[in-house]
Amino acid sequence: MDVATHRQQPSPLPAPTFSVRLPWLDNLREQMVSQGQAGFLSLVVETILFWLMFLLPAAAFLYHEQVGTWVPSYSDPEEWTTFTSILGTCYVFCKMPPIEAARWAWVFAMTPWIAENVVGDTRARANGNCTNSHLYKNLA
Image 1 (cartoon, one colour):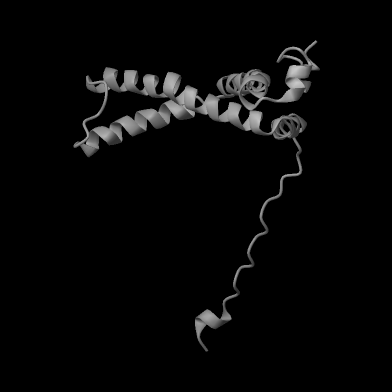
Image 2 (image 1 turned 60 degrees about the vertical axis):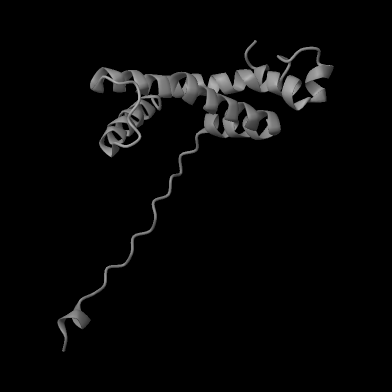
């Protein structure tokens, strides 16, 4: 008999399950979904502005400090490798909890204004100002 037929195949392990629920994360997700278009637009605006105002300039500055030029040459793949590694490092640094929390706070602060002025949400206009949102009911 063949040795391979006598070996027992290991049974696949079940995927790990996480039973810990994070109520603050569920609340955050619920608030963003309840805002609809305004919540989505504020997230898009925050992401674009964050990349343009913070992440790309920080990566360009660190690249300049390391290499001496502000942007990599289009024809040199080695320079692009250096730049993208610096950009990736800046991105990972920005995923630290205080910075990520500030980004989410910025999204939630923009959402009522975007609901009133961009999306044209009639509920925000009926309240008289853009800060009368259910997002701010627990801050007082």
